[in-house]
Image (tube, rainbow, N blue to C red):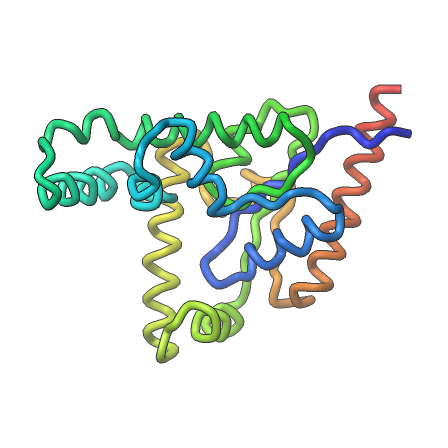
Length: 215
């Protein structure tokens, strides 16, 4: 029985290990993993400097426009030029790339509203990864340069707020809400490896159901 094309999307709290889980899932299924790579591809498609996509990455439009305006003024550009680089345009370019890579073949995509953008795909399995504060603080200090638990908590708060603002603005859904995703899971209970295996089993069940449906 041929396995249907599928996409696993991963939303995640900052410090929950979502990216690590995404890479592990991609390895388990032998499929591509996309995260920051989407910025580079969107830049190529649009012809815009990758810097604009990096500034816009999972950032709500208000703060994005402030960042772009400051950048244009520092570089001597016209302030009105940010209209061509409005958040909606950046989002469209990145959305086009997400659809393109999803149509190319099975893959894992982290963040960037991929679950919403691909909501009409036949087999799009949307997940949200969260974790305990202690686990997240430890990971943020270990992997993201926070020097103290207090600093880690502040990074977590700011990043999650930014991701929620971005997601809620561009979709008709709520970031992190259980009803938004097919599966939400606490990565701190089983750890990354066991959580990846649990997600693999869930995906395999979904794929088997999809294959039966088309027979």
